[in-house]
Length: 270
Image (tube, rainbow, N blue to C red; front, side):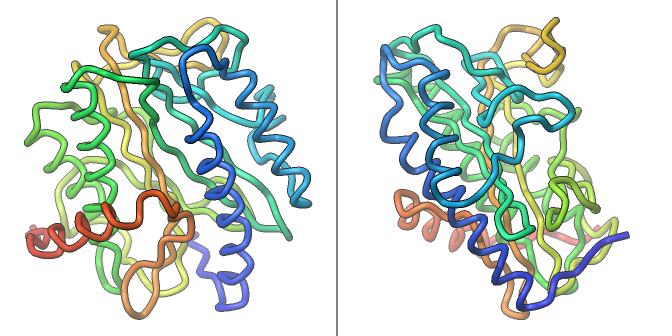
């Protein structure tokens, strides 16, 4: 069953997701060679708790940290550790909170210092694919329009979409219906309608799409060792389209440009 939120509930979700956005914005500025993902995790938890919220991931099915910090070939669910980040690495930071009974959830991938041009392109294309997906969120659209927009953009640039992990509905639970794959044909699946809130999260690799989970039971890495990027926003469906609840100040200009270009090329209905 797909839950639709009232205007009051969406307002409460704005606060939870605004906190996630604020924490990730701070962490994005701190990422640098020599900083460990454990240090980032400590900072994130402190900021979340000082705001009167609770880390959503910590303790979730036994997960041990506030952040998921996935470095280089790790796609998602990387556990923070004390190993320092190196120049040229990339690190995906994924986190959620619970505030006033509602969840927030977002992710971004950050370059550590200077990265090769193809690596920078991987990050940019993944971010752009998220914006193109968001541009398909409208009352009366289909869930599959979202994933189709991601797949079309990613594969046009020679990258691959991870298929084992999907986006999801979100609200009073971290994971709600519907599931939102990052691939597929448009015009299929559940209809989108005002009041739905979705966590849309493309996961993209530089090589093949296949992944495996390491012995820690959490960290998912690419099977071929290629780099992976992950971006996520929580988005509310409104009468006027999509409201991004986790938008960061640092991405507003680029996001607006990408959304405009995405709307010029609407998804063709199948």
